[in-house]
Image (cartoon, rainbow, N blue to C red; front, side, top):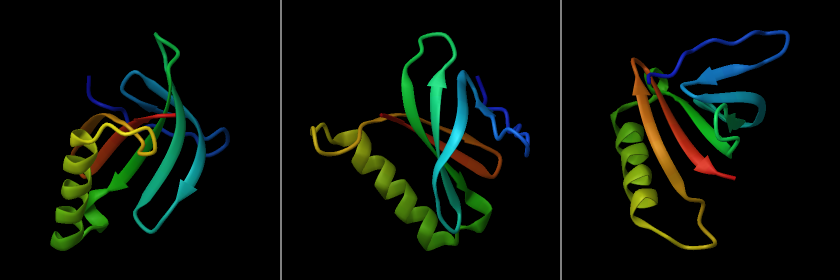
Length: 97
């Protein structure tokens, strides 16, 4: 299921596919990190919401490298990547919290 980009400025709830994000826990120049919960299972995750339009070729390559690395590693001190979803000019990375 493709993520829906819907946000309400007043309550800041955003849906990413089956995940309901309720709070921004971090932000950068081209990303926001959201605290979210799976609407069916209740699993809590962190969602890294990346605006791909703001990334040049080098930064896109760096993001792809980061995703490739996180998919390949299984270590208790490194956050685990659950899935990535790309929609138009946005990429969403779901991490276990």
